[in-house]
Image (cartoon, rainbow, N blue to C red; front, side, top):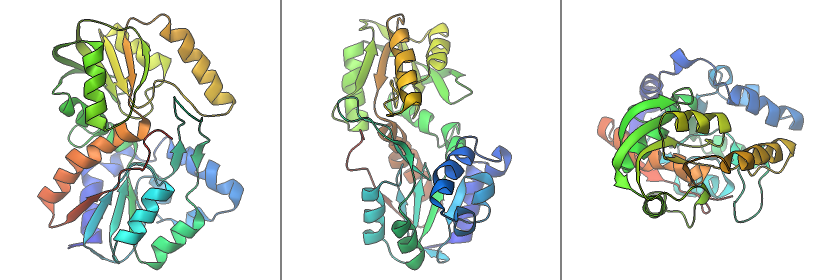
Length: 300
C-alpha cells in the first residue's frame, strides 16, 4: 500500500510532466469530445490535469493498494477495473479517451469518443483514481512505448525520428515473415496490418508505438535506412473525411516504399510498455500490486 500523493509525485517525476507542459494532442481532443455533450470536465477532472492533460485525472482515496494498467478507457477495461478494484486503487492508462481506431479486417472506427458518464460517476463514488500519461511516455527512454518495443525485439537503438517518438534500431538479420511472426507473439494479436515489400534480409527497423500511420514519418525512417517499419497502425481506419484522406495518402505511398510496413494495433503496441517496463518499475519502487487490464479486442 502506498500514499496516492507520493505515487503521483514519483510518476510525475519519472515522466517529467512539468517540463512537458500541456499535452499537444489531448489539450485539443478532450475539449473537442466533451464540450459538445455538455460534460463539465474542467470541474470533474483534477485541476492540474485540466492544465497539462497528463497526470492524475480523477483523484480518489489516499491509500492505494493496487495499480491497474491499461491503454484506453474502453467499456470492458473500465468494467473490469470497477469490479476488481477496492477503494483507493488507481488505473494508469496511456490515453484519457477511447480512440476507435478501426479494424483492418472489419469495421472502421469513430475516432475519439468520451468515457461514458456513468463510468466516471462510479469511479468517483468508489473513491478510485485514474492517472494517464501520453506524449511524455511516448518519448521516455526508461519507461516508454517505443523503447519497450525495441527491448522486446532485442534491438539496438541507433537513431530517432518523428520528433523522438520513433526509434531507428539495428537487429540481427531476419526477414519480413519472421518479423511478422515475432510481432504476433510479442503483441499477442491475431493478425497484423501489412503493406509494402516482403524482404528476405532486414537488419534495420523503425519503431513507432501508436499512431505511426503518417507518410512523412515513414519517409523519414526510410531515409535513415529502415527496411521495416513496426507501428500500431499502418492505416488510419477512422470513418470520416479525415480518415479516408489519410488512408488514400497512405495507399499512394505504399506503392512506392521499399520497406515492410507492419501494423500491430494501436492499443497492443502501447500495452506492451504497461505489461513490461511500467509494471516492473512500479513493483521495483513501491510495495504495490499491479494488475494488467488488456482489452478484449486489440483491433477495434
